[in-house]
Image (cartoon, rainbow, N blue to C red):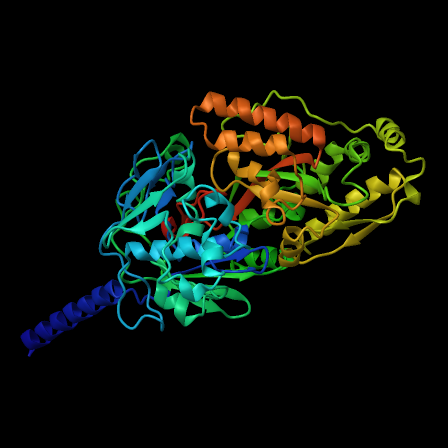
Length: 577
């Protein structure tokens, strides 16, 4: 009996151990965290890759959609590498014929428009190029206008009818077999590789286009590490794509990556996290959610920077108790005040614009909006972009007396006699209202009557791109690390559109086209400086500051590195309890 009891005891112990091991293998430990909760500043205006262009919409869609190329997650300066492409482009015929080969065996997520597992093919990229060509409101259209043969004529040829894109060829884009795309260009383009790393050119299967009648504003179907599950009114939800191809965490990085120990997951298969939730919430709610551990990462709203530290400059006690990490990242982002150059008050009166430029207290502005954590802008470019010169003088200074002199030169004896100026906000967050109050007070000192028009961010974009704003704050997160990226906002052909100021100068347009055909970096920087000098003389924009970001992260979140260019970051994150 004793032997039997002993044997039975051993069997029970072995069975229990095996059960525990299987339980761990199946990853059903209720204590193990499988979901990462992140936040967005604003509601997403569109998920359609042809139209999605705000930071929030791109952050959501980039976890699901994949372009041909991406940026190395852990290297600065930024380094391009293949994503859906299997290598860098093959370029011949003096740069006008570009061949891109696609990795085989890549499949889309499941969707009711797809009747069976659907493999990615070259024709899916052709479809997206065609969608851009017929979508006159797409911010990405200007990248390829005048560049791809037949691109500008395609809208007329199809009468903008999406049903014709399946059968009507676009001369400059063709699928060569199942896994190759060939682009026929009118000229060589130095930044083409950057364009192909943007979400404007992600593959879109014809089946989805037909099923949704080309309305992709609320749908995401891609090949990425996460499948889109929808928006429930509070958050965008997605889950790990179980059939995602083999992709691994980077094995190399720059000095920062090594110092911050961001290479400990090297060679491990990604993605790590099972489900992702992006919550849309006001600033106060986001802050409370993070403190309650209902958010795992928080980009700190500017108005909450004062809550990060105690009176001695140490991390605030409530943050210390949570053992959170606080990180400060530079952003490839610029911020400025913008005039509508077609407005009857501002557009034709440079001296009036100069008066406002000298009537702003820049030191107070940066203190108010960033607690002196941002830098004052001295260029159209930002630190980190080739051609930026940190020693460049500031173009304007706070000088109320000089501002009033410019008012006299503008032919204005009393600014209060002018029609009311309408300043429009970029959103409804407290920081936007604080900024509006700041500019209103400064303009009223000069005698102007000012009305604040509070707009939701989506409405701001809509009105701005339609040229319906008079005076407003604008900013720009660089989509790719080159000066050309921000200059597109000042080109005549992009108004109405992303050129919200309606600025137009033939010399700037000419130099911009010259820049797009110049490959030598020193020559490119010289052209940019010419453009910048003209723009600041014309003064459609008043440069204000360069953005930076504070991020709070709970200690179990690993591998995070903030970048305004790299948005497909979630696949690299890991949760270690």
